[in-house]
Each structure stands twice: as structure tokens, then as C-alpha cells.
Figure 1 (tube, rainbow, N blue to C red):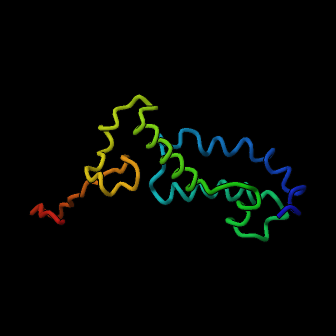
Figure 2: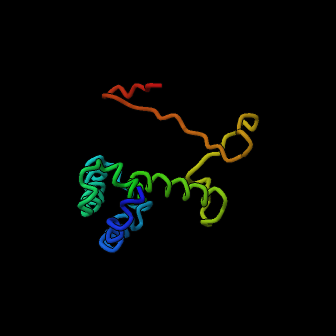
Figure 3: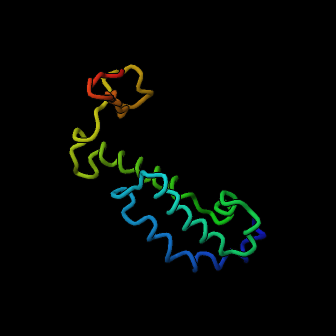
Length: 132
């Protein structure tokens, strides 16, 4: 991959204005609709296509050569970091508002930060039957 070093050195200059805009406050407004996610990823995909020598590669390979990750991976990583900060008190937010810690201390694999996932109840039709 070192043979692309010269050819891709102009990429950071071209892309330095685009990427911060794509990830600005992403944890606050994180897109959840697939169409919104695709639109954001298309912007980065088009930006990686600016390097003519990499056009023959698929998007994942272009990201690898340029040392980038997909925006989806960045959002997931950012979400995990934010959860960690909330749980450890670094954000000064009551974690109980958002998370419930697991009670089963015997299966936590060396830490006490395992979260409990609440089961959802779905209601269908006018009878409001509960599906479990």
C-alpha cells in the first residue's frame, strides 16, 4: 500500500473540509433511517473517489488505503465511547436515565458494567395483544 503514499497525499487537503461536517455532533443527531445513512456515506464515497489512482478499487479498499473508516463505524465507535463516558460519570449525566445495569454479577466477565436490555412489547390492531 506504500506505493499510493505520494498519490494519496493530496487527499487529506481535499477532504479536510468535508469530513468534519459529516461527523459534527453525530451522536446527537445520529441518522437511523437507511436513506439518511446512505446519503452521508455517499458523500464520503464520492470524496474518496477524488483520488484518480484509487478509482479502480471498491469503496472499502479505498478507505483502507486512505486510512479511513466508514461513517457507520465512526458513529458506532462514538456511541460506545459516549455510553462509557455516561456510565463512568465523565459526562455528569445520571446513567440511570438511560441504562440499567445487570444484576447477575457472576457472569459479567470481569467487570460490573454489563447493561440489561429491556424486552419490548409490541401492540397490534385494536385488541392490543401483547407479543412476547
